[in-house]
Length: 376
Image (cartoon, rainbow, N blue to C red; front, side):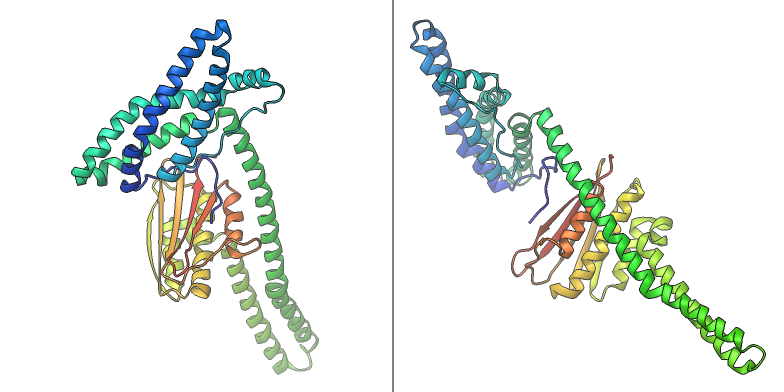
């Protein structure tokens, strides 16, 4: 289960999927190219005698239908995160609806993709047939070709710039709202910890010192005991305040960065945790803090609920994203439920427009991944 957006990096498909896509797509590419070209040319040539009008209407409808088919095909075979097309609403009679289709940018982007895909499909078909024979090509080269085709599909069949900006604005608005909720929950936690912990200790210190003051002239031995009690409570209050401050922003993270901070977290885990961190150059403080708490809360959940005997933490940085991935060998079945721990992680990531993805099939393994942008 995942929290996702349309700007998540597209992953390379498996070699088998890419080869099947290249080979199976060729008949479709050939058929749709012939139908569209013939329909368009015949329709334009005969439109003056009205015969071409229904041909052009049918060709336009075919282009849009094939574009939707290609979106589903690319999603299924290449794993491209393509949403369904957002079409202009078409109302009125047949001619009016056709005119709306013609001014709809998605129609022309569908047509551009379908026309480009024929020559591209010829090359991919040849590569697909060859890679069945040349196994190294199938393993290393074909997934990259599938990835490149996916990028082409995203560019032409995905949302246009205005739609992407609109979706981003909506996602940012939702993220900020979740961020406010997460900040309010954190404020309540700090207030509760202060009230139940350090505040009670400091009240006890004040009471002990007050009692000691009243006995100062009458019972020096009792004063000594009360001062020792106040001293002990003061040390506990300082310790609780230090723990509270560490929960807000740990000193080791500020001083030594994610690698040292996550290694310290792993050392406290009751199960074995391997840590790998490669985040040069150092990301912004907000990203580091979010990554730190995501790892900490995930490791706590693993120790309590997963039945795992070992876990792995991997953190790496690309040019504009820090990716955090925590996996375990537990029994799986983790879900992102409203109000649950994983939903809390998603809310924390959303405060910086990050995305949490959870993959946890029954019997495991479980992988929690956070993609945290560094470009804001």
